[in-house]
Length: 298
Image: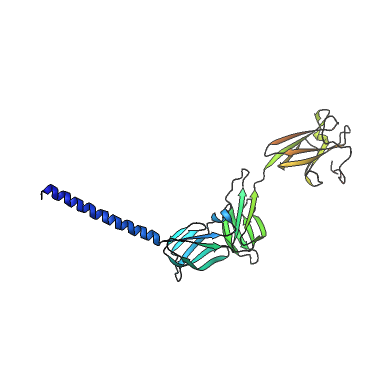
């Protein structure tokens, strides 16, 4: 046999052996994949919010002290077939499933239905969460159960808790909040959006703020929000929304008082002209609203 033929024969043998070895490796990998089992833990009743929780799921061999795998709610993990102990850490303790069976090529689902969800949102004026500190305390013993940031989902044993949010300058508390199994308690704090309302009492077209007083009420009520004594101007910082305006007139001319309404929107400045001489003012009244007492200081 020539040397060239010998080389070709040797190369063919090497290629054959390599192909055989690759087929063995592929078969072993396929068998290994077939032998794997899949395990997933879900929380019943919380929907997509439950999947947002970062509560750790620890998976142990039945008599093991160290976890063989760690995952989170709704995320699958591959394991050798067998029986395992599954533990979900939540506020107030640990939920355990002592004997969870897995089989090769199958997915096993563990359903947790005895926990509650808790989400606290602290939103700025644009609706973005500020990520402030949130602490949860047992509603009876007052023991601290855990802490997180606003905008995160916590899982907890059902019960009554106190919740503290680190809002400056002073913390915000919710007392005796009930957490129910299979449900979500959603609490929210929004940054106050305030605008300015400037009231211009007019007599014959001239501003008479120096001889008029203004009281701001929630619309349709006698609940006072703010008041302004006679002075250079009547300027109010108010939350967004509608308000009733009550103007008293001490000039001796025009109407002695006028009721009107204005709406504050966002952070803008709202200028409100209120004629006191009966020429064009809206919402004017010849008599004060029922049970309305005229301010004594004006």
